[in-house]
Image 1 (tube, one colour):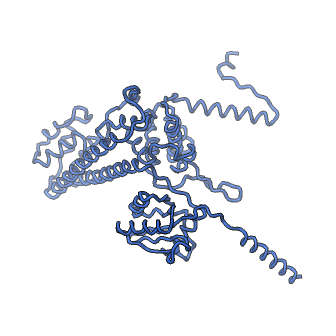
Image 2 (tube, one colour):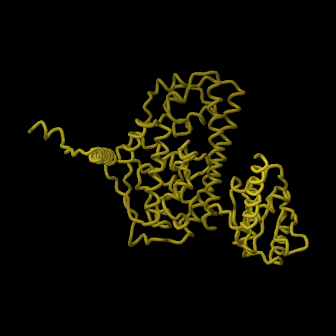
Image 3 (cartoon, rainbow, N blue to C red):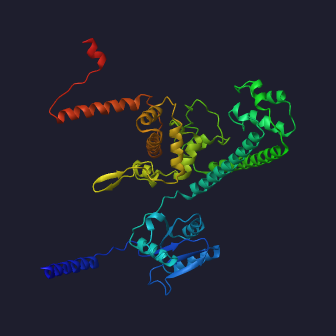
Length: 469
C-alpha cells in the first residue's frame, strides 16, 4: 500500500515539474539592462548574447558614466533599470536619460534578491532579468523642470532646518543665563526678541530700556519683560549667544538668496493661465501676510500662474504647503490615473493586508514623502477651523483619535487637491456642517435598508414635527 502511494507521489511531482518547465514568462523588454548602483562603482548587466562580457563594472566618474552609455549603445540597449540608492543614482540617471535611454528607477523593496546571493554581480543580473520580463514598475519622478524646482525647494528646507538649530542654541544660552525671554514673548526670533538679544550683545544691561524695546502688539507688559530679563550675564554664555546669532543671520541671508533663485526660476516656467484675463481670486484666509519661514515674495501668484488653479482656496493649504506638494508631484496630473492611485502613492490610503480572507491590518504604509507630510500638516492645522474640513477633522478625532484623524483628513485633502489638479475649477467651502449632514444621511439610509432586509418599512421624521403632531 505504501509503495503504491509513493508511486503516486512521484508521478504527481513529475507532472508538476513538467508543468513548471512548460511555464515561462514572456519577454517584454528584449533590449534591457540592469544596473546595481554603488558609491564607488556601478555594475551593469546586459543580455548574454550582446557581448562576450555581459557584466561589467564602471567607476562613478563622469567619464566612466559616458563610457557606460557608449557600451550600452553598442549592445543595442534601449531601456535601463536601476535601484534608488541614496543620491548616487542621480548623475547616472540624468546622463543616461540625456543619451536617449528609457531609464526606470525601481523601488529597492520590489527587487530584493534571493537570500544568500547578495553580490553586486547577482544584483545587476537580477534587475536585468526582472526588467526583461516586465516585472518592475518605475518609481514616480516628475518632469525635469520640476526636478530643478524641487531641488531648490529641498535645499531651502535644509537651510531652514539649519537656521532653526541655531535658534535652539540661542535659547540654550539664554536659559543658562536664566533669561526667561521665551516665557514673555511667543517667538525670540520676532521683532521684540531680536531687538532685545542684539541690544544685550551690544552691552545694554538696563532692564527698563531692554523692556521698552517690546513691540506694541506683544501682550506681556514691560514690567514682566524686565523681570524675565534679569539673569546672570556670564561671559561664556554671551559668547555662545553671539555666535549662535551670527550663524542664524548667515542662514537667513542664504535663505533670502535661495528665495530669489526660486522666484527667478518660477518666472521662467510656462504659464497655464493668463493673469490679465483670469486674475488671481481674492484670498479667503484671514491672515494674508507670510508667516514664519515663508518666502517674502508673491509665491501664491506664481503657483496660480504655472498650475492654473488656486489651491490655497482649500482650507488648511497655504502657499508654502502647495509649493511643497507641486514641487514633489509636478504639474502633470496624468502621472496618476485616478485619485486612488495618487493617495496610494502618498501612503494616505489604507494598506489592507489580507490573509485567509481576513483583513489582518489596514494601517497606512510608512514612507518618507514630503507631499504627504504637507497634507498631514495641513490637516493638523484644521483643528479649530470653522470650515467643512475642520468639522470633518473634529468628528474623525472624536471617533478615531488624533493620529488617525490627521491621516483621514489628509486623505480627504489629497482627493480634493487631485480633483482640482486634474479638472481645474475653484474650491468653495460647503460649510462646517456639510460632512456632518452627509454622515446623518448615510446613517438614515443604512437604517432604512436594514429594515427592508428584515421585512419592515420605516418612515423617519424630524423630532420637531413629531412633537407638533
